[in-house]
Image (cartoon, rainbow, N blue to C red; front, side):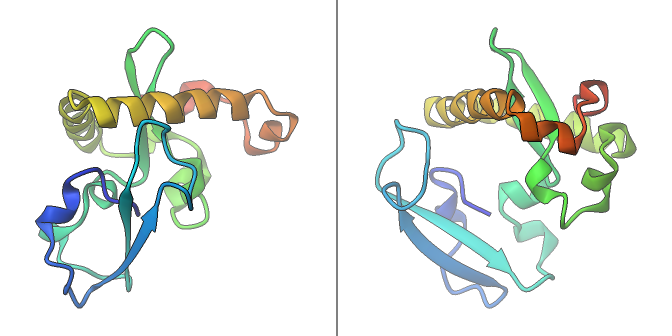
Length: 147
């Protein structure tokens, strides 16, 4: 999982349950307005739940901004190999309280211009991918993908 800008201050870098990787925006395709160093973390399968990074807390959903700017939560298709709920393809299988709280958290985070720009950029990238012919292999029932 990558840490959102500024999220690294929540950790001291010596957590025994996390493996840290430091990368630059030149190494990975990030939102063009982002620059500098970014951090990826991964765990060994277990962690103190109260100390998880934000991306872990809202897993397996991701934010999507419609072209008009409205927020939707969608299942993160990249998580299909890790999460049977994503593989099932129906966001309604997730607890509604979890989805409501994840949405509120994303709404708050989207007030940060760097995070909003990243979510907007990623949303447009998802739009482009959705028009690719191979997308049909993963199913297109959009009704089940949104919250």
